[in-house]
Length: 181
Image 1 (cartoon, rainbow, N blue to C red):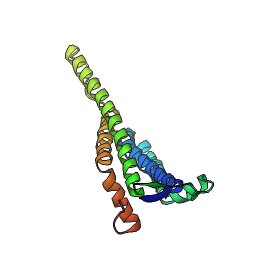
Image 2: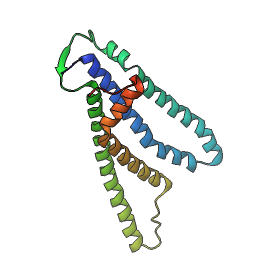
Image 3: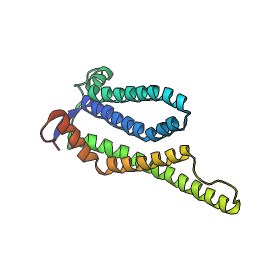
Image 4: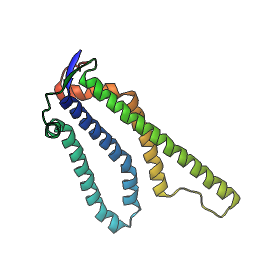
């Protein structure tokens, strides 16, 4: 049995939220890149710096969430060490479960979006067959959204199937040595 408390679980949930946010940032990246590429040269050049700065700022917030999860948990709980309980699962296993749950959510959301894109592209293909003058080529924005959907499915699969391994890797990177559990 592993002895844990509300503080440890809240730290794990804050870190799981940081993983969720990182995945969301990665999924949004293709659309941002296409937006920059489709702008006129001067406007695109002017937009690069604010977008890069905002992405770096968001990555910084995710990193701060990850690094200072324990401080946020301590602020959120009145007596963080008071509520203890026994568990068969070590904190690393809890984090692995949370990462796998994030992966399942992203995977299923990506599959639903993928179904939408398949129906939309098939519909456009049928319309161009019936109306030969119509252009069925997806725009750059649609292509970016399709790439984002594919990226969402891939990241969802990685998190779902490798949640335990990612949690162990994070534990080794943070504390060194083998993860317990």
